[in-house]
Amino acid sequence: MVERTVETSPPKKVPALVVSGFLGSGKTTLIRRLLDQAVHDGVRVALISNELGELGIDRALLGQGEDAYVEIEGGCVCCELSDDLLDTLEMLWQKVQPDRVVVETSGVALPFDTQLNFWRDPVRRWIGDDMAVVVVNAEQLAEGRDLEGTFTDQVTSADLLVLNKIDLISDAERVKAEARLRAIECEAPLVPCTRGDIPTALLFPPDPGEIDRSGEPPAASPHHHEAFETEEWRPERGLTSAALEAALSDPDLLRAKGFVETDEGVRLVQVVGRRFELSEPEVPPSPDLLGRVVLIRRADGDATDH
Image 1 (cartoon, rainbow, N blue to C red):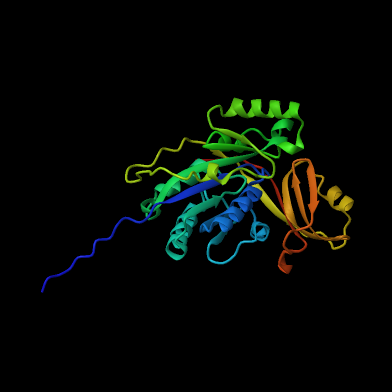
Image 2 (cartoon, rainbow, N blue to C red; image 1 turned 90 degrees about the horizontal axis):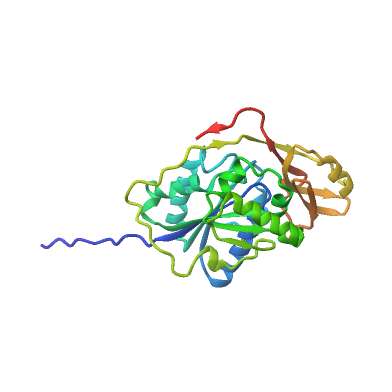
């Protein structure tokens, strides 16, 4: 009797995209557009969203469910949750067999350190080409706000820079904003846009290259990981927009996001820097998210060295 051996070919390589950017830059909006286009094109996208805080607001905003969407909460996938990211990537590959992988980092995570996880077993055998796109809030640049530390580390790690929210600044402010950005990172391609509206082909080129991940991974440069703290605020029902804005007028507040029941109905409230926004959700949030807002500030104390 002749024994037959079955040859197994290497798994199909899957391109991966890391979407990073400082708090409130517009990452979720860009990803929602990307997912809508993927549905239109019949492309299977596995999405991992790393949200700072534990409410799951991004899940409600993205409108994604089922097996291809996983949210990792309560920390950063670039450091303390890196093992969770690895396990989740492998689970999605086994369960979903995606055509593309997207990792949305929290607003304080570092994209290059996240990408280093693609060199680890077991995902190194099936992750193909990868790219880090960093979304930048044009208004933040124009104001010169929070441009040190985490912001700089994110921008200098970018393979592609997306200058988002250009509709919020004047043409003269945009020129200054681009100059400030180029002073930090002079080589990465720069794409200006409004509401994350850029061609999908920029994020996933039609002919991605292949990366041999059999060797040693690139070395990460030492950096300081700033400490941030989150707090959940539960506003009372029926507040006016003016009362909400007054309650969230805190100069130390970097970001706020959540669903509130105002005197005009359910609204998504967002604070980015000095900008306060109320909007009607495209999809009604689940009842457990109503009346809960995540507040993010810098934490007192020293940053963590990595």
